[in-house]
Image 1: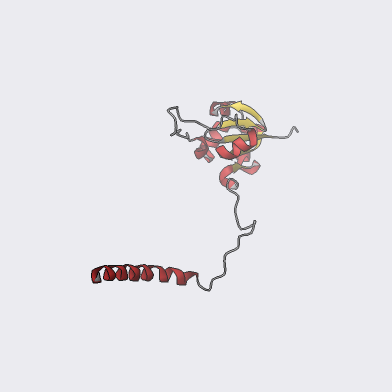
Image 2: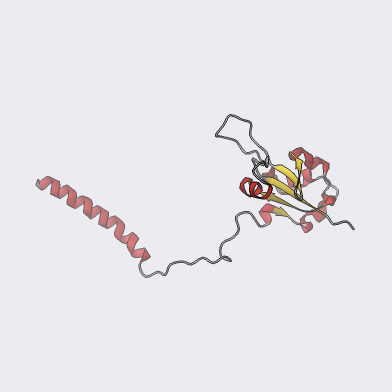
Length: 147
């Protein structure tokens, strides 16, 4: 009986000693409030887009060469782990029209694009619908206005 009380007493002591410093760190601090401007959007910013100024120096290249040079991570394959199928690549869209797989980037000159953006698979499905073949996301080409 005495042995059981000693074991319980030691366990409680260890528990209290472990959690007291943790409890003290939160004492007296106001809760952090996040506003909309404090939280950065998940898929925006320079990593997910190529602006007109980014494309201005590479007008003579195809979009495939531009993306390979400036944003090679957009071309990576997304392994499908849940089912035995080949890895998926990003789909390519011109504005809201599906163009095809990554190989169509060879057919578009950088001079034809105003900007390019990369959408994650979830964002792409939300924008283009559940039938979107965008297992690794989507590359959206925004056409240059006719001059």
